[in-house]
Structures are given as structure tokens and as C-alpha cells.
Image (cartoon, rainbow, N blue to C red; front, side, top):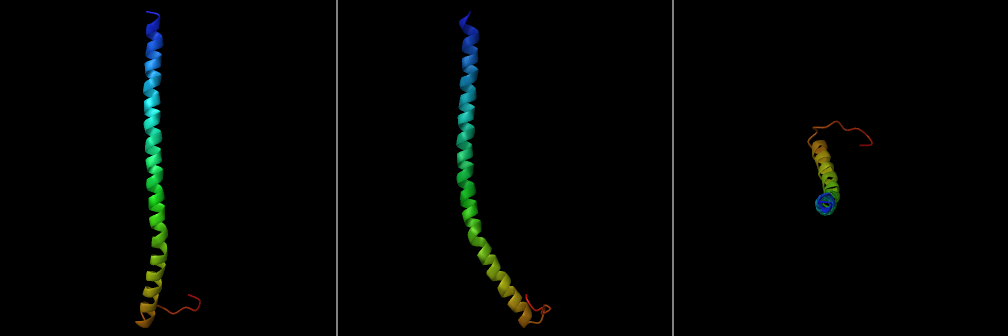
Length: 71
């Protein structure tokens, strides 16, 4: 009977250890995915900038936008 409380505590600690291991594994997966997203977004911004420049040029040629010096 004296071993029973110790066994319960050890079992509880083992369960906690497994859960912590799972959380750590999930975090590694999330970090990998976030890195992939950041890498993908880094390539998107220059493309958006180019599209914006082209749109500005089209608007100027069609006289749809006000022409302001410095823009």
C-alpha cells in the first residue's frame, strides 16, 4: 500500500512528460511552417511593389490618377 501513492505520482509525471514532449514536437513543427511562410512572403512583397508601379503607370497613361510630383 505504501508503493501505491508513489506509483500514482510517477504515472502522473510520466503522462505530463509525454504531453510536454508532444507540445515540444508541435512547436518544432509550427516553427518550420512559420519559416516557410516567412520565406514565401519575402518573395511576395517585391511582386506587389512591381504590380503597384505598373498600376500607377497605367493610371497615369489613362489619365485616371492625379499626377503629383514625387510619387
